[in-house]
Length: 638
Image 1 (cartoon, helix red, strand yellow):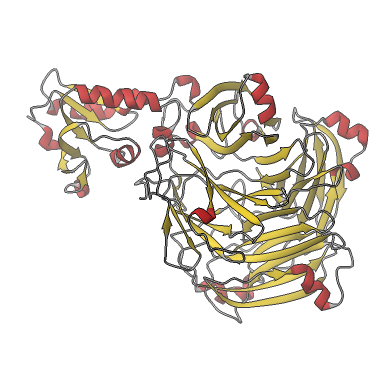
Image 2 (tube, one colour):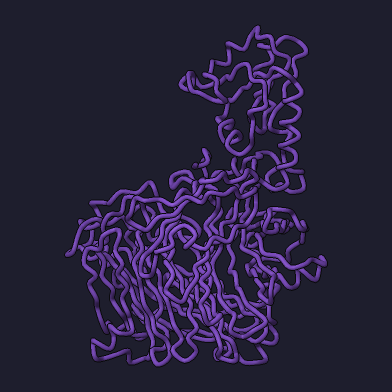
């Protein structure tokens, strides 16, 4: 069953209401508020701001003795809320109730509005009773300001020699945030709070590092697998908490990475690969709300198929469930894809693939849009926008790594995908092209990109490069701009695998279409770069592939600065590189900066990638110094 909450709209952005109601530090206050209303006897409920439905979705209000539900907006009269047909608030006058529950935050003025309708002595209770403490608020005047709820969840594990490490930067201070602090709560697998703490962050662009092994030692914890809730206080510029998440182990063979969770729970997620014969695919179901997920509240189906298998068990609030996908779909096998029916119960989830040889990798699903339709203008404007929407991904050195790609439907309305793949050498020269045709929604198509180069005969002169997935309007016209794919990379020497997935954008053209080319700050077009490359824990080396994709011809070369920063956000050293248009640049930190420079930056430093002339897309990863394992995922910018 889908939670009746609004989480995100592509027109209005993310909702702060569900975050306010479900914040871990608000839960006890919410239960105390409900208990008070239970004791009050008959209660009239006033819902002036439309917040009651979200509250009822997240907490059980069935124990309240409701004698009427009232609204302010005349157009809402007659709706059904809490089993009652709503009435205009003017009908409250003369009602024989001792308590009115005004279901809104910042309710002082709303209370004043209705006092003339109530007999003297009527008690008014509001949602302000479950407000967070003032010390957790950034904007104390407007409670539901998105900046008050700059929050996110992260998969977090410290168990059986497996560790997790979150790395980000204090970009809020760089946007003017004052006294920026991190408030965090760690939940175990059952949803129990293990520890809550608060740290003051250093200055602008300083690093934020949370390592599970350090956390366990700091708070004298046992082993755990669960989720970490992060709340940034003093945020400015962004209400989004971005981070890189590394999973690593005591053994060199354990190494993988993934991206932030995307803080808004969705109805559907896609891009979940079915297992191969020697694999176990685990979907980490991590409840993002205090209310339990009911039996058969979430499910899964083969992409493009209507038969849904439902998980017949309850998952407590904030709890974690390790779901082997064969528990629901025992016959599913790669290259089939799976679609998660999430019902807005959790943020973008992680999946983990365990192989019979003990190696593993972690990645994330993506939000499957329910609001998109094919855009008939995209074929029409191809003469203006060139390649238009591009999904770029690296081709790692071909003498060691094999790369495959599988396009993934990422909107419920996508019934066909007309796609082509263009392979480019690092110098920007096209070396191969593959037309997928018009793929159906339930396709099982996987293309070996390394094999395409071999078929072309020329290979890659640079030894590495990148691929761009684009729409092929000679094969079909159904395109919506939400083009996604899974990219899988195998080290042919060790057998270690990493995979990542992402979606398309329009790159490097001064023309704009809707909100493309996207900009991190300000209106489109986004024609500059600010990317974050974290350094890794001891025994690893950070690597990065920067791709200069261009929808239309742009500057002949980039003007890219690789700036090595220490953990305080201070520059240590910089290197200037020029990347050809439609080319790429693959580098390792150890080969780019001298040992003395890396020592000065420290293990918690990072590389800031800046370019004021073009928009680069980046992938980062770690490589074990022993060569036993590597990781790869797309980067974030701010």
